[in-house]
Image 1 (tube, rainbow, N blue to C red):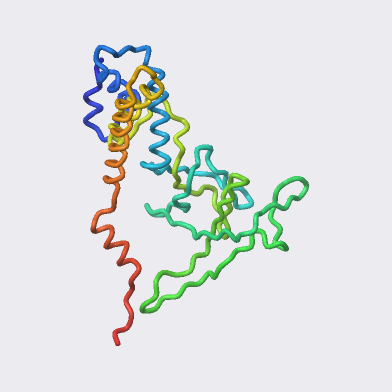
Image 2: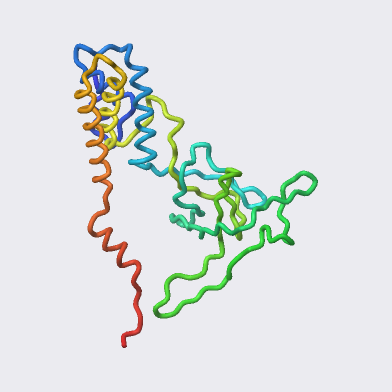
Length: 245
C-alpha cells in the first residue's frame, strides 16, 4: 500500500497517511475494509492528543456585537489570548471576571444599562513611566462567560477581534493536516485500539501496544519541554531594575 513519500518530507502529514502506515505495518493481514474503522481510531486519537498532550493553537477572527460580546467558536476548548492585531502584533486584553454581564433588554433587544454598571469602562486611561516600573495601565478588559458561550469585552469598540484558543478538533477528516511529531503516537494508538477489544489477542500483546503508545506520547511531551534559554527568560522576566543602594 503506497505512502506519499513527498508528504513525509514535510513538517505535516495527514490522518489518511497515518492510517495507510498502520495498514502497511500489518503486512499480509492488511485489508482496506479496515480503513474506515481505523480512520475513526485516528480521529479519536488525535482529539485525545490535542486535548491533553499536543495542544494546537487556533486563531479565529470574530465579530463583536454592539454590546461588546463575541460568540465562542463551536470547537472552543480553552483560552490562550484575545486581542486586536496592530502593526503585526496581537495587542492583548487584561482578564477581569468581575465585569458585569450586559444582559439588559430594551424592546426585546439586548443592550447595556449604564445605571447597573453594564458597559461602563473600567480602569484609568493614563499610564505611569518611571525607573523600576513595569508596563502601564490597560484600558481594555475581557470576561469569559462560559454559561452563555461568549466573551464580554469592556472598554473597546471594534468590528473584529482576534481569539487564539485551543480547539477540540471536532471538524476533522482524513485530509486533516497533523504535525509530524504526532505521527508515531497516532500510529501506535490505532494499533492499540484495533486489538483492544479483540479476545483472540493475548493480554501481553495488548499491553505492549499500550506501552508503545504511552512511550510515543512521552516523546511528544519531552519535545515540547522548554529550553534552558526559555526557562531563563521565564525567570528573568520577573526581575526589573531598581536604584542601586
